[in-house]
Length: 163
Image (cartoon, helix red, strand yellow):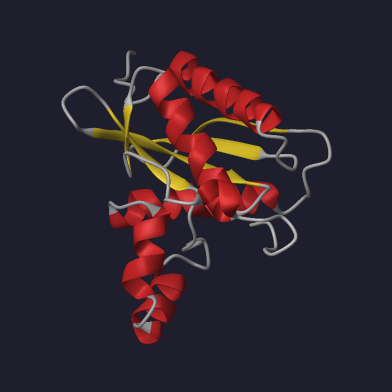
Protein backbone atom coordinates (compact mmCIF):
# COMPACT_ATOMS: atom_id res chain seq x y z
CA UNK A 1 0.00 0.00 0.00
CA UNK A 2 1.24 3.49 -0.82
CA UNK A 3 0.12 6.48 1.20
CA UNK A 4 0.42 10.11 0.19
CA UNK A 5 2.84 11.94 2.48
CA UNK A 6 2.30 15.64 3.02
CA UNK A 7 5.71 16.30 4.58
CA UNK A 8 8.42 13.74 3.74
CA UNK A 9 10.86 12.57 6.39
CA UNK A 10 13.83 13.92 4.40
CA UNK A 11 12.36 17.46 4.51
CA UNK A 12 11.52 17.09 8.20
CA UNK A 13 15.09 16.02 8.95
CA UNK A 14 16.46 18.98 6.98
CA UNK A 15 14.24 21.35 8.97
CA UNK A 16 15.27 19.85 12.30
CA UNK A 17 18.97 19.76 11.54
CA UNK A 18 18.96 23.36 10.30
CA UNK A 19 16.96 24.58 13.32
CA UNK A 20 19.45 22.95 15.67
CA UNK A 21 22.39 24.35 13.69
CA UNK A 22 20.91 27.85 13.92
CA UNK A 23 20.42 27.39 17.64
CA UNK A 24 24.12 26.69 18.04
CA UNK A 25 25.13 29.61 15.77
CA UNK A 26 22.95 31.97 17.84
CA UNK A 27 24.14 30.42 21.12
CA UNK A 28 20.61 29.53 22.21
CA UNK A 29 19.67 27.27 25.06
CA UNK A 30 19.21 23.56 24.13
CA UNK A 31 16.30 23.11 21.74
CA UNK A 32 13.72 20.45 21.03
CA UNK A 33 12.30 20.49 17.50
CA UNK A 34 9.11 18.69 16.44
CA UNK A 35 7.84 18.32 12.86
CA UNK A 36 4.23 17.25 12.21
CA UNK A 37 2.57 16.45 8.90
CA UNK A 38 -0.68 18.11 7.80
CA UNK A 39 -2.72 15.56 9.77
CA UNK A 40 -0.84 16.25 13.00
CA UNK A 41 1.17 13.03 12.88
CA UNK A 42 4.68 13.20 14.27
CA UNK A 43 7.19 12.93 11.41
CA UNK A 44 10.41 13.64 13.31
CA UNK A 45 11.74 15.05 16.56
CA UNK A 46 15.15 15.79 18.04
CA UNK A 47 16.11 17.14 21.43
CA UNK A 48 19.54 18.55 22.13
CA UNK A 49 21.49 17.34 25.13
CA UNK A 50 20.36 19.38 28.10
CA UNK A 51 16.86 20.07 26.75
CA UNK A 52 14.32 19.74 29.57
CA UNK A 53 11.91 16.81 29.70
CA UNK A 54 8.84 18.99 29.04
CA UNK A 55 10.33 20.59 25.92
CA UNK A 56 8.87 17.90 23.64
CA UNK A 57 5.35 18.54 24.98
CA UNK A 58 5.73 22.31 24.56
CA UNK A 59 7.19 22.04 21.03
CA UNK A 60 4.49 19.54 20.04
CA UNK A 61 1.77 21.80 21.48
CA UNK A 62 3.05 24.81 19.54
CA UNK A 63 3.06 22.88 16.24
CA UNK A 64 -0.20 21.04 16.94
CA UNK A 65 -2.00 24.25 17.90
CA UNK A 66 -0.79 25.99 14.74
CA UNK A 67 -2.17 23.13 12.63
CA UNK A 68 -5.37 22.98 14.62
CA UNK A 69 -6.12 26.66 14.18
CA UNK A 70 -4.53 27.08 10.74
CA UNK A 71 -2.33 29.96 11.89
CA UNK A 72 1.03 30.29 13.63
CA UNK A 73 1.17 30.01 17.39
CA UNK A 74 2.34 33.66 17.49
CA UNK A 75 -0.86 34.72 15.75
CA UNK A 76 -2.90 32.50 18.07
CA UNK A 77 -1.33 34.29 21.05
CA UNK A 78 -1.98 37.70 19.53
CA UNK A 79 -5.59 36.97 18.62
CA UNK A 80 -6.42 35.37 21.98
CA UNK A 81 -4.72 37.94 24.20
CA UNK A 82 -8.02 39.65 24.99
CA UNK A 83 -10.23 36.57 24.68
CA UNK A 84 -9.54 34.42 27.76
CA UNK A 85 -12.80 32.50 27.51
CA UNK A 86 -12.10 31.41 23.95
CA UNK A 87 -8.51 30.56 24.87
CA UNK A 88 -9.76 28.39 27.73
CA UNK A 89 -12.23 26.73 25.36
CA UNK A 90 -9.44 25.89 22.93
CA UNK A 91 -7.35 24.48 25.75
CA UNK A 92 -10.27 22.26 26.74
CA UNK A 93 -11.05 21.20 23.16
CA UNK A 94 -7.41 20.28 22.61
CA UNK A 95 -7.10 18.31 25.86
CA UNK A 96 -4.51 20.86 26.97
CA UNK A 97 -2.25 20.35 23.95
CA UNK A 98 -2.53 23.93 22.63
CA UNK A 99 0.51 26.07 23.49
CA UNK A 100 -0.34 29.62 22.30
CA UNK A 101 3.10 31.24 22.24
CA UNK A 102 5.51 31.81 19.31
CA UNK A 103 7.49 28.83 18.09
CA UNK A 104 4.74 26.93 16.24
CA UNK A 105 5.09 27.64 12.53
CA UNK A 106 3.09 26.28 9.60
CA UNK A 107 5.02 24.68 6.73
CA UNK A 108 3.78 25.45 3.22
CA UNK A 109 4.70 24.09 -0.18
CA UNK A 110 5.29 26.05 -3.40
CA UNK A 111 1.52 26.37 -3.92
CA UNK A 112 1.07 27.84 -0.39
CA UNK A 113 -0.68 24.65 0.76
CA UNK A 114 -0.04 23.82 4.42
CA UNK A 115 1.77 20.47 4.54
CA UNK A 116 2.72 20.43 8.22
CA UNK A 117 4.04 22.42 11.13
CA UNK A 118 7.22 22.86 13.15
CA UNK A 119 7.29 23.46 16.87
CA UNK A 120 10.40 24.47 18.78
CA UNK A 121 10.93 24.90 22.50
CA UNK A 122 14.02 25.61 24.53
CA UNK A 123 14.80 29.31 24.43
CA UNK A 124 12.52 32.36 24.37
CA UNK A 125 9.51 31.99 22.09
CA UNK A 126 10.74 34.57 19.57
CA UNK A 127 14.08 32.77 19.26
CA UNK A 128 12.36 29.40 18.91
CA UNK A 129 10.19 30.86 16.15
CA UNK A 130 13.20 32.38 14.36
CA UNK A 131 14.89 28.96 14.15
CA UNK A 132 11.69 27.34 12.84
CA UNK A 133 11.13 29.92 10.10
CA UNK A 134 14.72 29.95 8.90
CA UNK A 135 14.94 26.15 8.96
CA UNK A 136 11.76 25.82 6.89
CA UNK A 137 13.23 28.24 4.34
CA UNK A 138 16.46 26.24 4.24
CA UNK A 139 14.40 23.16 3.32
CA UNK A 140 13.05 25.02 0.27
CA UNK A 141 9.59 25.56 1.74
CA UNK A 142 7.68 28.59 3.00
CA UNK A 143 6.23 29.35 6.39
CA UNK A 144 3.45 31.18 8.21
CA UNK A 145 4.52 33.54 9.54
CA UNK A 146 6.94 34.25 6.72
CA UNK A 147 9.39 36.20 8.87
CA UNK A 148 10.48 36.26 12.52
CA UNK A 149 9.07 38.82 14.92
CA UNK A 150 10.79 42.17 14.88
CA UNK A 151 13.34 42.48 17.64
CA UNK A 152 13.67 38.74 18.29
CA UNK A 153 17.42 39.12 18.84
CA UNK A 154 16.76 41.60 21.63
CA UNK A 155 14.82 38.97 23.62
CA UNK A 156 17.22 38.78 26.51
CA UNK A 157 17.70 35.41 28.16
CA UNK A 158 17.85 37.20 31.48
CA UNK A 159 14.55 39.02 30.84
CA UNK A 160 12.42 36.11 29.69
CA UNK A 161 11.84 32.58 30.82
CA UNK A 162 12.52 30.20 27.94
CA UNK A 163 9.43 28.64 26.43
